[in-house]
Length: 606
Image (cartoon, one colour):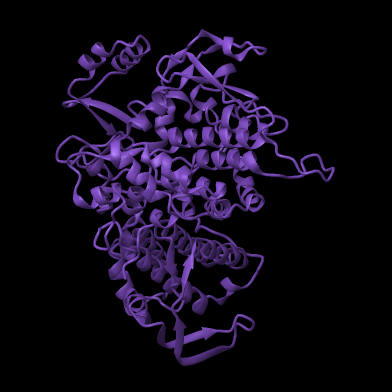
């Protein structure tokens, strides 16, 4: 893909510069709108560090190292002060106000964007991008802060937003022109608008934007590849599928499962692509060792929306600085043991000798082979000894030592080894700091849909009876056979990396066996007979584990735990998960703190 900062747009890549151009001299032609569009993505890029760090470090998959600075330590310990660099909502406010500004200009200069005309122009598509980006910013902000001030559409500069935020309850906005949507040729010009400062919680944000976007959006995403023939442009700007994904995710967080699935459906059942691979289908394009390629390029078959970074255009973030141990990087954050166990204690090629009449007598005929080496080692995480990564053979040997409880040899092998997050280091020089950031991709939506089928009651047979259909959720999770008739090229989330066959697959039954994580021997069982809720919660947690293996360090984990805890109306679910990465008295302190939902959120500055 051509870098997002095109030569004709380079002078607009500093968003502050773009925003201070006198409006009388701006928006005279399409190229200036296009430059403003690129400026919005520059503002969205500025949110990457904050969203990923807050989404992962507060979860159970990431922890601090001794090198961590005070801001990261405070986040890790849930003691976030207003001067923490990751606690400021200002970058969200800046993006929202810039979206307001461009949306207003489109409404003023191209009022056709407000009408449901049959033909969609680039102005309609750009308007859709702006509305999606504004909704995305509000939704992510409220996930972080718990509540956010409503930034009225008439507030179009960072200065106005700052004055509004710092004002008393009523803010007076002057010299605004309001367009009458019932008659686009007429306008009402007034000198002063009184804006009441109100705060929106998550339910209100979701209700606002899931209502607003379908009413206003005609199409999403300027078709840049017409100019350059590069299909990756389609997924580096907001597009129709990214809009569907955002709408589905908002509905899912509000437990509106039917509406969530309706928006995910066009992504899940996108079988009309002309190429060799199914667009958004989990087929063999990124199977097994090719899974890593999801993060070394941009591919429209897996990526739905990706922010491209390129150091050539000064587009960099700090993730590799925080994760990499190689100088000049700082190695402030690393994977938890919980995260590593998720990849290292999943087993392939198992055979269970199941004694149905006497579960206590069940045992493993074959324990199988441990480790997810497609998504785990040297992809999502790695072991470093000095300048070198441990080889895959060495890691497999370490796992074999665990099977035989040979801890002395483990200590010898792992002496002097550091554990690192590796996902943002793949194919990168130590100075690059410009790995692309995936906002949404296909596997994320597949796992959301598996989650929906865990609880969704619907009339599957058309007989008026509402039932769950967890087998479809299991098919999405395991082997991809969720379409009727099944598409043989679909592999499923686990199947794409080889964990879908026989006992390797996730199953839901009356008796579910427990296994020692390091030897895979049967050590007990759950009896879920006549306990539908327990089966649903078990499957839900299996899906959460799979989301961790598939999506770790992409910014989802804390909000996944939040969503499930809210659905269960059980804050202790999140509290127990997060506290598990701590030890001793601190674990209990964190657990008690997070049993209060108010402590899940970063406090807004007073």
